[in-house]
Image 1 (cartoon, helix red, strand yellow):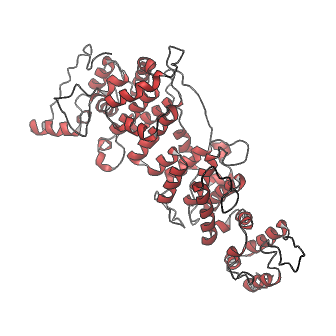
Image 2 (tube, rainbow, N blue to C red):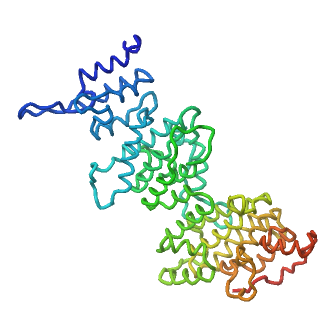
Image 3 (cartoon, rainbow, N blue to C red):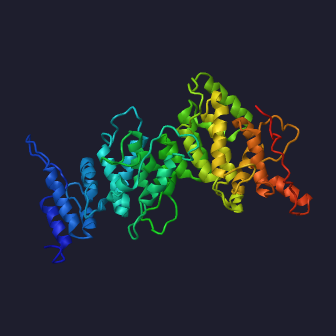
Length: 494
């Protein structure tokens, strides 16, 4: 009736004056020793929901109500348990209160306190830990407010989750959580004029859910893990979209929360670019070996000689695979996925240009092969190299030194056969630093065929050497010979 007569603000003020305790789930003041109980939770939620559903401006009218008893606005006049209950209210498929500044600020504050509180304290100064159900509802609420398909439950029929432990030889498949991320991303497209996805709320809630080892939604038939969803959201956060976000993304705070949660995968996708890929590969190494993140990063970025010296002792105390046949584990399959999409799928000359800020196939290849070495037991290096060689041959369609994917071959040659692109050649100590191809254990015949397949491409040699050759030959194009004898190895045999 108040909506029809356009007197909704007056009606809400009248309710505030008449039943202030029922609107706040608050026990009335007691006289003497007589105790009083809080009103019914169901009545409290029903009253607030009726108000919120009445009109688009009703949410703001409710939050602007002044409490005569405390002298505070509505949201600051109710207890934390009442706030937790109100944030779960759904009005016409939207969690409208999460879009209001004071409510969102309180939720962010509680999530921040939960992430930063020491693990040994089950209860902090603000109260008990946030319930799993409430965290799940915050995630669902953010998706519903943005109008994403995942909030409608369409993921249950669109995504499949494979947890294969091993890979049949030469079948060309590489299982990785990155594959699921591509499908999840299709479900996270916000609707126009929705205010976009609130990444601050979403990532903080998912970090807590992931740290507790819980599913992001309490429903049977979940097709992807909490970590996969978190990785996808972090990968999308901060990117430009066609939908204008209602709230500015606080990347620095979220990055700190990822670090406090020890979630390397989330941090990797939040950082993105070269640094992100280093963290992503470091996560694979840390998960497989008992090393620190710093040691893993040194293994990925340091010298190859230091890499061998640090990895070999770690495997001395580990039992090697009982089988003589190499079978890639989950970590190996993830590296294969990265190799396929970051290195073997190179199609343009510009992708080799590091100045663009993107990950070049050479840089990606170096990280991938170093990670492969770290994840492989020293007793299985030769077998793993033979397996990987067969897989690469199939992807490149490499036969007798010929391949239709010459740029990919050039990327592999630069990755495996050149010592250090950043510093140029130092002939005085070239023997001190091994070639990456020799460290992995690739056969010289295979490397010779790779070199022949990309013979004549300037992309197959480092930029500093290419510039020297161009200047010494006066910019001539006929600089490389195609006479490569496949019977002659290009590196020392192990």
